[in-house]
Amino acid sequence: MGEYIKQVLDDLRQRNPHENEFLEAVAEVFSALDPVIDSDPKYRRNAVLERMSEPDRTISFRVVWQDDEGKPHVNRGWRVQFNGAIGPYKGGLRFSEHVSLGTLKFLGFEQTFKNALTGLPMGGGKGGSDFNPIGKSDSEIMRFCQAFMTELYRHIGPDTDVPAGDIGVSAKEIGYLYGQYRRLTGAFQNGVLTGKDLSFGGSLLRPEATGYGAVAYLQEVLKHENDTLAGKRIAVSGYGNAAWGVIKKAASLGAVPVTLSGRDGYIYDLDGITTEEKINSLLEIRADRNRSVRMYAERFHVPWFPDERPWGRVKADIWMPCATQNEVSAEDAQRIVDAGGRYYLEVANMPAEPDALHILQKNGLICAPGKAVNAGGVAVSGLEMSQNALRLSWTAEEVETRLNTIMHNIYRDSVDAAERYGFGYDLIKGANIAGFLKVAEAMIKQGLI
Image (cartoon, rainbow, N blue to C red; front, side):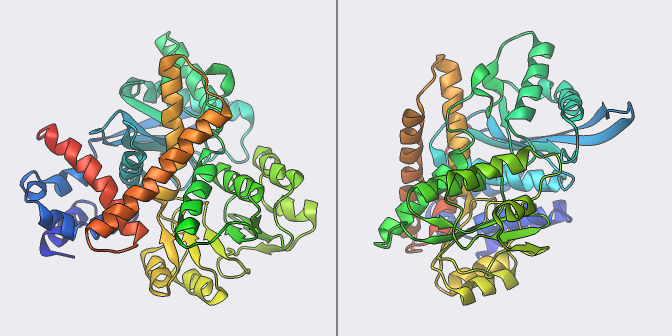
């Protein structure tokens, strides 16, 4: 890493001393940029790195809601509008007790590059609250969402900032949020949120899109290696939409997903999560108020491993973390190496700790980053925005065709960028460079704003 980039990162650390996830995300992107910065003085002259690593704005607010017993509760809400150079801010809302401003800055920064890679006109943003919907009644979740939107609605709009769902925010929460937005504005602007129910402007395939897109990207990688998906055993973490989409699409193509995980442990299904009953059970688990993937183990009589993660503990050809950031430690990475398998594709946002990713790459695994692999979700959100604007509703086949084209282009742009700047077949550096170039060009051409 060159001295200029080191200095930019040092200055950023001084301004954000306690936001490690955010700092790691910035360092991971910038570590690929030395040859890009050296190739053209305009990037330094226009202070692109300094501007790119600072959010356009961060919005913080109090959220007050009542539980079913009438007791008031107070949570914090945030929206980080990170970079709007190529379009309205776009990114999910996350409801979890682990959410903090630092987490959302990290996610908003990543979202900026992910959205740029899709080729759609979307800037990067992220938001959410430290509210945990698990264990709450539907009425409590509705009251929280209404209180949250009462503060957020001032800062969003179809041409300003378009939130979506994320961890803890499903189509149900999006519905409650949109209902309150409509009540407050008196207008049916259904393009202000994506991930909506089909009854008021949602898109077919949106729930599956992140997983379907990840499998489309995986197929591009396998094609490059003269390999196929049929018969491949896939270790998957999580049990939300991303994991469900990966499992559903991969199983339909002849692969054998074998794991699911949650905060309390993981299951190992040696026969594969391949039947319609098994795949649909993920939806039932998520609908349960006290959800746990242990329910799958009990229903299908498979082993359950409490308080553990599947990484390197099972036999797999492909490793696809779909849950959350920092779920793959250095020790997990070494176990993956020892367990065999060739492919590691991140479906969550930066699920591997920096040392873990280094171990995987050093030992010859083909690795691909979340900002590329999981871009299918926001890509279909962008397609949902287009359908809302045009008053159209595309078929599932039309949406999937567009999604597959976007994922092919993301893969190709990443490969081309890595080769152009001397990194060979490095999908991580290639994605970082390709995303950077698209955002940087837009920033420079719009002046110092």
